[in-house]
Image (cartoon, rainbow, N blue to C red):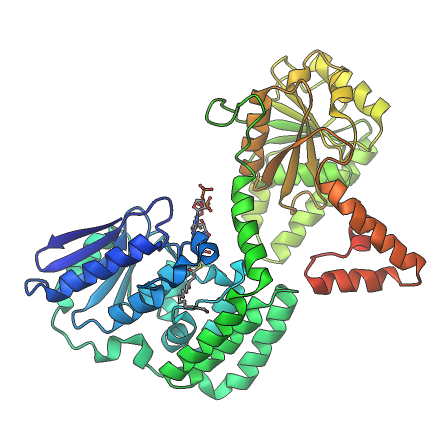
Length: 525
Ligand SMILES: CCCCCCCCCCCCC/C=C/C(=O)SCCNC(=O)CCNC(=O)[C@H](O)C(C)(C)COP(=O)(O)OP(=O)(O)OC[C@H]1O[C@@H](n2cnc3c(N)ncnc32)[C@H](O)[C@@H]1OP(=O)(O)O
């Protein structure tokens, strides 16, 4: 799991634990063995830590449940061993240096990074904090302000920004490992005293109170309902104390999170989100046995809120889309809404004008279905009316080539009945997007009785391609998402009957952590 390679006086410890080089117990033990071996070998003058393919994406998240994250040697032990090494240790970073991987990197004496590498502390999003000294070493490396920005937000940054902040010493275009080995040779024997991050002072300490207050305010706005950001901030503030005392604060703040229900829930969600796209059917079909067909172009029927949102989700992924209406007036209204939303993204600097123009160049419009003779996929997104949907599907079935997938955006209607209006029920499937469809991650792919495995595979591939978390569900009233939301909507309505105002109900739901309260969501639909 960790290859030990010697190169002309340099020991290269290369982590090889696919898929992301997580710091599982065996990996930690082998890194420790490698450090010991390199420390004892008189021929070795410097050490390089790297990862095959990518650096290290952090602790092995499965170990937080099993408990083995706390088995010796822990990531804390490794960081201390690395930092206190008498021989210089250089991190060679390509790909991701996240969480515990980032903590290992900042415990090294030098860091050489490939220009495309990424850095971050995503612990906050799985309900914990960088508990291997990250909250103490990072402020010492980048200053209090940057640490209070990056640790509670969990934001990833690129190599260029990491260089600006002082996280990395050199950014390279070529092979980071080769550069790091060369660099390690060149600094072997130099004093390391000012290279030990834990020994540095924290910059920005004079503004500690205002920086802390601003960080708390931002965390409460951006990560509503989450407890980890506040514990992250408290731990980072501990870095103003001597290192050992700060480590104690980090441990006590960490303890509260490691024993919290939120940690369990967020880590469950982490793995569930990755499991959902991997579908399988009762007949045994799955991605292992069935290939999906890539969608080269598509049409969306209906330029209302859902239709334009779905069109945007596809355009954002670079899929050419024809937006179709029966009436020019409705079509123009939908296109204006879509353009307004993109203009908003430009003014908020989420995309540049050039990117906006490139996206819109892939949008076509049509009145009526006649032009849909060469599309891989049609998603119908008109209002929920079975008779209307069946009429549209019958017409699409006549016009579109026989291999075209015909999918319906519905939150409740029977997919089998809609499919019965066509001669290709195997290519009919429900796509249940959630409002706003260009933003919400969940996509329910509803499988009818006759939907083929190829159609399901294509829909799952398509969902991932447009940045959604696609999940295959059965064809029943409300599918899965709405059956869950049903209870929530009922309780919200009861509160109104009992005298609450809709805005009060929304406020409570939003303070709990939901991006929009139930009544605001209904206003959007
Ligand atoms: C207080 C009491 C203490 C007692 C004493 C204890 C002392 C010990 C303290 C220890 C402190 C530890 C502090 C450190 C904590 C951490 O590091 S937490 C982890 C932080 N890192 C992350 O959150 C990164 C998570 N991963 C990702 O964001 C992405 O995977 C990626 C790296 C950006 C790559 O993305 P992509 O290419 O899209 O791949 P994915 O589909 O997301 O993942 C591929 C498969 O890998 C699995 N996986 C990913 N990351 C991890 C991980 N860190 N651990 C385990 N598994 C991981 C993922 O589930 C996928 O698996 P499959 O679905 O099976 O393919």
